[in-house]
Image (cartoon, rainbow, N blue to C red; front, side, top):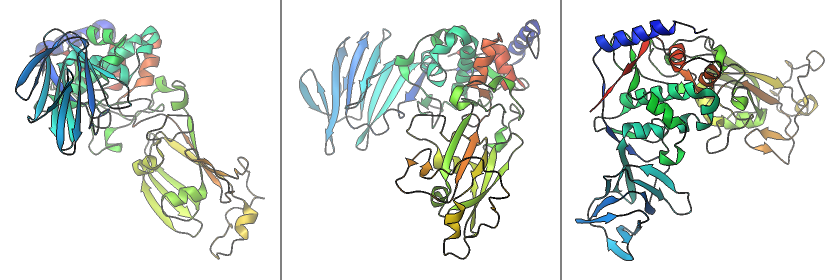
Length: 443
């Protein structure tokens, strides 16, 4: 049984939208600045993997065929090209590779894996580094986005979720591409793009939703699209994460994100009271007060240490302090702002022996409190493991849910909906309000 509206009514609304609203034009080709995997590229190797390319440098033009390769490097401020056993000093700003027959190339830095891309490549001098721009068909671009934002493996039991992701990714593109038709590949700036290497079953989802985007049902304009890995069972409003309110998002429970997602559904982060205090230039922490929105997401953390000093930290800054940047995600990672905290009591005898007059334990009489667990003698934190020296001031346990900001589509929730038989239309209307699906035109 579908929710919201029956399929026929939904199709009528979409068709009506197509008739009433002006179509949105998405450029056929777009440029992707490759900064995610190549943030400071100084040495590069490029190889043609399929088709052929017109290759130009220093006013010279030649054709690169499948299997041909070249290297780019530098010595001091001098940049050079090594091709066909020749070393050439580069005096022009750009190097261009343009294909007319569906070319594919791959590129790498020293001691790193090859990364494969469709379309054209422009390499420009940028100080002592190289700036990389991959130009390709916008739908081919999405084939390198959807499986890195979601997963090809979901196609077997959650294909409709991939289709929903394709529509949101396309909407995000048309909303965020700049006036020159350029977007970045970085998930820290825009949405993740990993090129040809990640293409798979998700490509069918892109093809089956070709041209479809989400627009406001009143104005017909593309909406600002947000999504995250897992909303912890509760959707969030935009003003509780960023600044302004967006009517396409509400704060309410999301039953489809409950009980799915494994370690990102429920996680715990442990940290010793002294390590927590040190992170924010305080003495060992004795008390934490959380201020949260209706969803339970924390927007303010008030820390009080054993010397009665206190400090207020924003919810976002608190997460950033402990988020596992550059490390793998585990069930003991600090993954978001939706959490509660408990305190495992300190070694009372040890703390009472301390000479600092303000280091009091009047609020923590072990005869009046139920210990939630053993004293974790040598734990520093989930991130740092254990130390050789015992810690005596207690341990805080953060019991969290979800991964990410929680605004818009929960990718794990979408997958669960797809597994239960909901269509991608149902998924999108569940997570995005006052919006309809509209087909774009290419230019």
